[in-house]
Structures are given as C-alpha cells and as structure tokens.
Length: 190
Length: 340
Image (cartoon, rainbow over all chains, first blue to last red; front, side, top):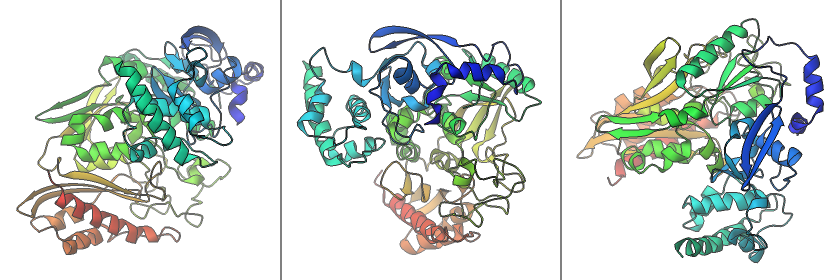
C-alpha cells in the first residue's frame, strides 16, 4: 500500500531534495504533468506526479473511492474499471498514460437513480458478503458481458477469474452475471 | 516508486530515438530506459523496486501506427507487438489456423490483464521467482549479479528443471512464447539503426553465467512484430497448461504441440515446454523421436521421456520432471486425436 502517497503533495517536496539521478532528456522530472481525461462522462483536468496510478488518481485526487485497492499489483481485480469500454486494472495503469481516454468507474454505472442491470443483479442474488471486491466484480462483469464471454457458467467462471472474492460469494456472482447478461442483451436489442 | 521521466512516443522512430537518448543520459546510472506498453510487468516491478528505469517511454500511441494489427495470409501470421493478448486470443483466424497461439494466450493471466498486456511485452515478462521479486533477499544473480541464488537451497517448488545453471534456476513464466518457439516464429526488432529479424528461438538467453542478461535485445531495441510462418502443423496444434488452480495461474508444466500427420503417422512434430525451463523451451529430441512414427500412447510417453533426459530437480521441484513428462504425453495424445 506504499504507493498511496505518490499522488499526494509531500512527494514533490521529497523528490526535490533527492538528486541521485542524472537530468532526464527534455523534461523536468520534478514537475507535475497536466493531463486531461474523461471520467464517468465528465472532462477532468489534473496535474499529477507521473508515478500516480489511475487507481490513486481516482481515489486520492478525485474522491472516487468505489474502485478498491486490494493488492495494488494486478492480482486481485478489486481496482477494475473500464477504459474506453474495456475492463482493465487501474492499479497497473499509469494515470498519465490514460490521458485522452474515457474511464468508467462503479460511480458512473447507474443511470441517475436507476441501478445498472449488473448492480441490480448483484443485489437480487446477494452476490457479496463484505462488499470490498464488489465494485471490481461488477465492473469486470459488465466488461465480461460486453465481450460476449458470459455465454455460460463455465465461461463466466473462467473470464471472471481475475476478480478474487475472499468471502467466496462466487456461486451467487455467477448467477448474478447470468441474470444481468439476459437483461443487458434484451436492452441492447431493443 | 522511484522517480522517472515519462515520454510519449507517437511514432516508432521517435520511440527508439527517445530510448537511445534515455540510455545515453543514464550511462552513469544503474537504471535505464524502458518501454511502456500494457505496463502489467513494468509497473508491478517498479512498485516492488525490482525495476528502476529513469526513463519510461510510452509506446501505446504506436498501436494506431500499425503495430497493433493482426495480419493473416497464405504465408503466415503477423502479430504487431502492440496487439493486446485478449485480441489475439479472440481473433477468429488465429483460433482456427493457429489454435496453439490463441490457447496459450487465453490460458494466461486474467481477462483484465489480457486486455492490457501487449504481445511484445508478454514475451519479455520477468520471472515470478520470489527471490527475484522480493528485494529484501540480497542473493539473486538476476537482480543483483554475483550475489548468489537463494532459490538453489531455498523454496524452489515453482523453479525450472530444464535450462538452469549454477547461477540461476528461475522459471520463464510465459505461455505465448512456447507457442511462438514451437511454430518457428521470427521476431522483427526495430531500433534507431534500422530493423532486423531474428528467430524467436534466439530472443531469450539461458541464464548460464549471466542470468541478468535475459534476452539478445540490444539497448534501445524494441520488438515490432512476430512473424509465424504458415505450415502443415499449425492447425493441428494445442496448448495444455497444468497449474495449481484451474484459472489465472502460472504453469507448473505446459506443452505447446503442433503436428503434421498423415494416416496416423507423424510427418513432423513441433514441441515446446513451459513452466519447466529457464527460457521458452523447444523439445527438439522429442520432435525427432516422433518423426515417422505413429503417435500412440507408448510413443507419446517415450517422446516425453526424451524431452526430460537432461532435467534436474532441486528438491521441492523434483515432481515437475514427472509432471512435465505426463503433461507432454497427454498433449501429444490430444493433438493426434484432434478432428480438424
């Protein structure tokens, strides 16, 4: 969890003191970089330390704490978000590399007061216990259905294997994804 | 994470030029320039302080410049280095014409990682050896040359039984590379001084006395594409992966197998082993053994034994020799029975 601080101001003060590395070509290594990206259909512009992960940008700078920091090494899936519609791990994405892209987090999934079919399915099937992995599970499941990798239970288990649930709510998660797949498919053909 | 300067390359020429400049600027430093594609290995190892690049060159914009394309014709398959694992795994032409490639990708990592990770980065992923990944261990000849190898007498259940040296027994962790080496693919490499193409089999280096030098890429060079020649064996091919859990896990043992057979007789076999060796491992002895023979259970087992004649266990990983033989034998028997 040591990288939480990379997005915070004190890093700059500390970095300014250290001069161990030679000057890099063409850019000042200590200077925050300004980036613009779309998050949940809203244009955002921020100045960040280039080390900031997309996850830390969302959580620490933009107050979007839905995506969770589980392992911070791409092993648990709790930080899953959609970038240009594809599910990715925000902990292994540099925020600066996501400039110009469109990011969807769990906060951007509902349509006003109406839950997304995947959110509703997780409620209907009690597809969680503690809930920590749930935002990542739901974002991953939305990606899974959109990729057409949710055609049967075996496919759902395989293509959702990147999202760990320590409470082992897996059977209910599979049921929820099945339900949401039908609702999403019906909606997309209407 | 240590500080680094970030650059975004719009074109290949710009990327390799930036790399050359980064290397020149860092000539007095231990660190160097790294290309960023999916970032799934690089960011992970930078957080662990195992990799410490002073310059990071984001090459993702090159996807638009043709390095993100899959091309298929009668001569073979060309996979751009920035094609994402998931896209190659789901490509209908790859699935039907080169199933071993699609399967090796589909059985690797998780879908989120496959959506991110590039093919070029995939073959360059670093070992999962815990002593390499944990900088609190001083002894790692790969990370800290000359310091020794903690795995030799340490916890080595996942380590290599083929291709090791007294300096290093870290397993090459990937899956896709086994498909490439079995199908005799070539790698197109770009640099500031032009392009060159080498056999994929020449990309990785066995650890020998210099386990820190993992590939034959020169400083500043970038993988641009993989070229897989069309051949009679590509369609009758498969990837069999044996692991501790059913999905989202590295191989304990895996086999990439491609067969050209007629009337039950093997005309040519192409075989590679994963999870068992320090580099993507082509099993030429097993291939030679099978040529001209029927692929029955007995010959499958004998071919598999041939592949492990030089294998050596280090204690916890002794079981992998038998597991590897059975994995290869099963893969061969499944491949010969494929309805294509």
